[in-house]
Structure formats: C-alpha cells, structure tokens
Image 1: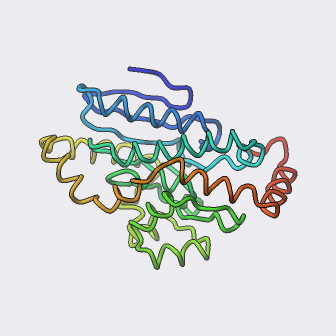
Image 2: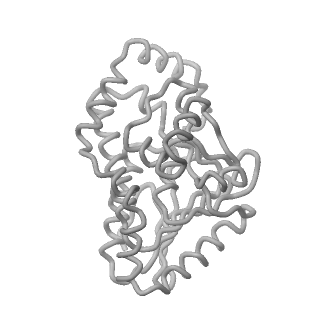
Length: 260
C-alpha cells in the first residue's frame, strides 16, 4: 500500500480507512489535494480493497481550504492548488466503490465539499462540529465545481440562500438538508462508518457500481468540467485588488500560534 505525506491509510479485511493527517486542523493545501487524488486512484485500482472510510481526527474532520496558503501564494501557486483540489474532488466523486465519510468534527466550506463526495456521511454531535459554506464571511469565491456539488444535495435555491447567509449546521441540523445522513457521538463516528461501509461492501460490486452511477448522475455532472477553465475563473477572482487587500489584512491578523 502506498504512503502519503498528509494521509494515514490502513486496511482491515478489505476495508481501507483513509485518515486526514495534515497539521492540527487538516487544512486543505496542495499536498493534501494531491494525496487524496493519488490515494483514491490507487484504492480504486486495488483489487484487494472493497470499500473506503474517509475520516479525520477526533473533533476535527477538515477545516477547509488553507486560507493563509492561498493569501500568500503567487499566481502559479494558486493555479497549482486549485487544479490539484478540483482534480481530487473529481476523482473522489467518480470513485465507484463504497465510500463513507466519518465526519469526526468541524468541516466548514472545503471540508464540507470533501465529505459530500461520499455515498454516506456520519457526523459527530456537538455545537462546534458544523458543516456548511461560510466563504462569504471573507468574500471568498466558491469555484463552480464546489458550488455545484453543494447544490446537488440541498437544491440550487436553498444552496444560494445558505451561501448568502454563510449558514453553518450541526449534525442534527444538517440531516434534513441532506448534507449529513446520520449523527453519532464522537467516539462512535468511525465505528459506525466502518460498519455502514461493510454493509455496502456486501452488495455485488458490479451491481453497486452501476447503481451508484445511475443514482448520482447529477453529482457526476457537477464534476464533469474542465479543471483548467475553472481555475482561470478562480484566478480572476484572486487578482481583484480589493480581494487581494482583504487577504493581506487577514494574514496580518494571524498570530504565530494560529492553527493552519
């Protein structure tokens, strides 16, 4: 089994658990994005793996995009990151084996979108454990693919309202919206995710694969875009002078101890 700088991958009885391991809060940077794409391509081609659980750390799943990295990157770095991240999302949505997300804690914005690539999501209870798209709090652009994935689950009109209000939801609040499927105590999220994934692994693989493709046509369409074209649009937004100044102010406000 390959190793990855920002992921821990373990395998037990044909079930792979991919645990995000990228700093204190699992912020999404270029390396994590590359590792996710590589890992899911490897797991998809591995005949000894029948299902995957994607997990985070206790009380933290993924804090979203690494905003400090984005604020301090040059044009080439920005393009490299968004190309890697959007490609990873494509690969994870197209993954045709069972994929269950163990959302072990807070997962705003980009973390929400990573969880939404899964077939089923089990999330930790707790007021600080939330999902949702809060980018408008910083006037951050939401790339088309991310917006389309979010809207697939909530519906377009509700997605737009949620984005306007930067709404964040606990596990119980997110279930009626379709963002989360089940809530559990923190220490039960991973065991429940593994059990559910093993249940899906009992379905004859060709049947599972074909049906997953049929019933997620809208989600597959959401990622069926040219990455380079979307990155061009993101780059335009990051070149906006007002936005660049806001990002500089954000970086200046960070203390040396601020988690990345």
